[in-house]
Length: 319
Image (cartoon, rainbow, N blue to C red):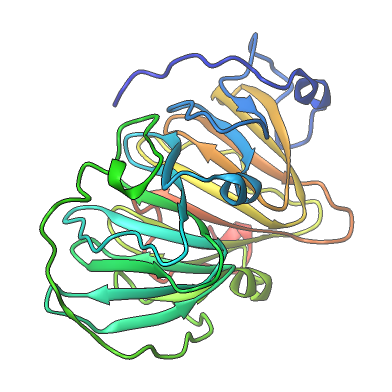
């Protein structure tokens, strides 16, 4: 694993909010190990990081912009012009997640001979692509397709910026010409299907989830879970020694705590709906529901897998 580089705190006001809770220690380090910011996206590397990923994805005009890079998980923003596409490709050892923020895409997955899994996807739909699967997303709408992607593990160099598809070093690689099946209807999320092609509406699924944790898609290097944190509740102070983590808040507001040691936790930021929370491996962290009346609804991606396929924890004590 690469060494973590200290990163300047961009919003000092966030630290003024550092009131203690029953789940976060009052012990303090000299400074937090990350940044809380909604400013221009700059890939900070493997540090704790909170930013408005929804706004960043909508504002991004580059074909690809790396927004956070760790060894086992990487977040990129993508903008596909009208009539453009991601490019037919396959990642032999990388599992991938897309979330569409704006626009309409024809999503195709399958083999080099036949793309048999075809859906028409729009805002709040997510696309789960297992390693070894040929895939492409084509913009079939009248406006740019705005989305973000998570790779497990890292796929591009830290700080990658590709203004157009032609800047991708693999854009000129020979491509197969598979048969493309007719699109079929997107179904509501019901259960973790494992490492198979999967498209569903993450906003609807997260709103419908009432479990503390529900595994939604599981592969060896990438796992998606849905979470519901009750009033007065929290995710729980924890640390993953070899797992990088992404969380996105769908509804509610939360305090995000991080620290290099269990006894030294800081308030990194107050996160709201649309914000991404990036937690590198080895970082102690907790997320606390700030609402006095509503649950905190969010989803998480782990790189690599953290829980068994099909995991359901109705309440936190079942974890």
